[in-house]
Structures are given as structure tokens and as C-alpha cells.
Length: 491
Image (tube, rainbow, N blue to C red; front, side, top):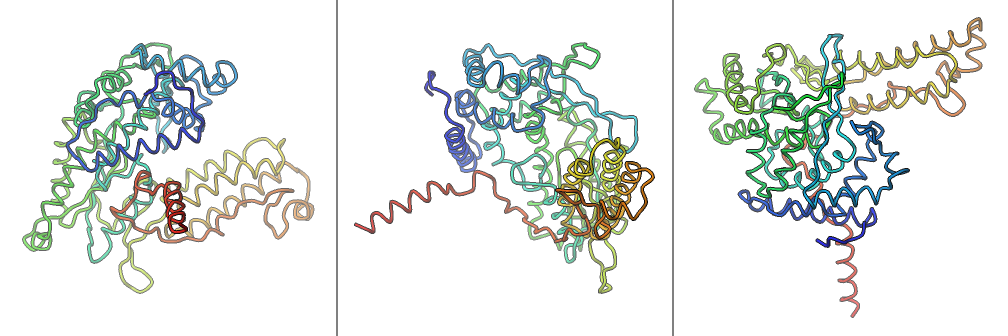
């Protein structure tokens, strides 16, 4: 690494970092026992820091300051991005970099409970360094992660987890008993030693290990202004936290994956002997275990899972961990999954938005349409439409048509109520002429988004064939190779 290298352009930085990530991922995949050294130089590389800055800046959270009060706009307009990254790089290279405590933010949990979720807001400089660490470490650990894990992983999404549950519970597999597991305060209780022990399996660079440990031990500045040490956990809200949680929780994935592979082709024989087959599907700290067996097998798996996560400093939430039959249905990641009788008279697995998910989006619509009448209909619809479009796009891969129709009627009613309050005393004829052509709310530049017009489709189950960003071909290199080939042919 050239210590005096200038800051690269964003495009060149992206290309360089992608090339480094592809090499790291390939080396990690080819040699499962390899421990990586000299990664600190890659973290300090100008291209890595530039890409890390771009990703932090593109996030809406860049407008939120940490304990030092600096935002992305402050860095751009006062400090200068190049000067900021150069100073950060010099601190990392000299070993003088020290993370600041994260700023505590307590967010109310859904469901009307009085419980709060603790978020930690790191300073912007810490977020850039965490993003740089993630750029280097993620391709290495992705080679080890099991296909059953879907949360906070590149190229994977909620729909993949739901599709796998749908696949496993559908005939002829028919895994009927389901353990709904929830790890209690996972991000707050994870053992630091457990995280670092699993990181050391792949990372040998002491400077990188020291940097990770420093972030884990950085502390929390509470809302009351008191500095609180972090003995356990990785603050929820940090860029590096989801990766560290996945590294630790991969112990749970590996345990169940080994049990699955051990049964092999004997699964049918096991069922005939009264033994169970099971698979785990995990999304961050939420997971389900689908069981082809009886309820007693599912109960035994809860105790077994407790023993697996105990060395990580974790325990299952007694309130949220339960056992259900697929005919009763479960709610997972905002979806309702249940077996019902289909139109052909045969049992079918249905996935559709859960009631809490629908209530959440209806609550947002109600909050937006309860604002004062001073804004125009254009402004109101520009606030409503992104909420409706995002929610419907997320749930369109399911049996969601009836839910979308219900949401359409609710949104229409809320906008009409808003219009009646805004134009108090005006009659229906005037409102229809001004705002409701075809009885649908329409402003000068935009119409109300229609949830009922969203076409629902079944999400394609991808199984274990989900590619990573580093498995994709380098199209620029392929184009260059083709040009060279054409030139040789022309000769």
C-alpha cells in the first residue's frame, strides 16, 4: 500500500474495492481453514475509506450526529471530505484511532407496549471505519455462513426466508410443527469473548482484532448524559453490529446444519422409526425451526437450542418462543404463514401480511392524514405514496390481494376525511370536481397510489443458489477480454 497515495475517484475506488472483495471471498471459499493476515492495510486503503464514506453518506442516518455532534453535511461543508478521510487514515495507520461512545436512543417497540429498543448511534468517523471493516471482513465470513441465514446478508432478503418456510411446509415435505424462536436482547447480551473467538477462526491480524474489540468496548452515552460501559453486546445501530451478530449466531446455524447433513438419505427411514427431521430458518435474532415429526420433538429442540446459544451469553425469550402447528399458522417477519384448504379442496400453504403489519402501515397513513390542513393535496400525496408503494412492494409476493383492497379503501377514506377538514363547508359536488375525478384523489402532479392495483406474484424460491455480490462476473473485464479476442481474430 502506498502511504502517500491520493484519494481515488469514487468510480476507481469502487472498482478497486470490488476486486479486493472478490479475491478475499475466493480465497476464503477455496480454503475453509485459512486465517487472514495483513487486513489492516486494506482497511486503511484510500479506496476502502472512500467507498465506506460513500455508503455512510448515502444512508439517511448520516443526518444524525453521534456524541461529537458531526454530521455528513458538516464534514462536507466545513472539514472537507478529503481532509477528513486523510486524517482518519493517518489515525488508523498510526494506531491512535479510538472509537467514541455511541449515543443512546430508546425507540418504542411495536404493539403498544411500554418496552423500548435501545439503539446506539456511533459518531460519523466511527461509522466510516466500521463500514471499512465490513467491506474487508464480510467477503471472508460470507464463505462460512450457512444458506439458512438471511438477515443482514448481501443479496438476501425477507422474502427468501419466507419462501424457504413455504417450501419446507408444502407437500410432499410437509414439515408441520414449527418452533418460533426469539433470542432475548440478542444485541445487548452477546458475549464479547464469544464474538472474538469466532472472529479469530478466520482473522489473524491483531490490529483488526484490536479495532473490533475497541468498538465492542466503546461504551454508551445514555440519554441522561452518563457514560455506561459495555461489558456485553454489540450496539444495535452500528454498521458492524449485524455482521458481528451473524458471526456469533452462525454457531446456531452450524449446529442445525450439521444435524441436517448427518441424516442425509436416511430421513425417510428416521420418520418411519418415529424420529424427527428438522431445518432452521434464521433472520438475525429471529428464527423458526420447522419439524417433520411430533410436538414432543419440537419441545426437545427448544431445550437443545438453549444449550447451543448459552456459550454465546444468550437465552431464548420465554414470552416470544412458542410452538405452533402449520394449521394454526405463525407470524414471522411481518408475514402470516398458515395451511388452509385451497380452491381445489386440497391443503395449501398461504403467506400474506400479518395483522400487526397491516396495522403498522395504517397507523402511518393515519398519522400523515391527521396533519394540519395547511399543506396542499400534492404535498400530502407525495408523503403518502412512498409509504404505500414500499409496503405493497414488500408484500406483493404473497396472497395479498384482499389485504391490498382493504388498504385501498382505508387510504381513500382517510384522504377524503382530510379533504373535508381542509375545505370545511364545501359540498361533495365541489370536492368531486376539484379533487376526485373518477372518485379517486388526484392533485395537479400526482394521484393517490392505488394498493389494489398491485399485481401479486409468488416469490421464486432460490434455495442455496443465492449469489453473493462477489460471485457475479466482472462485466468490464469480460468486455475487455472480448475486445482482445476480436482483435486477435481480426489479425
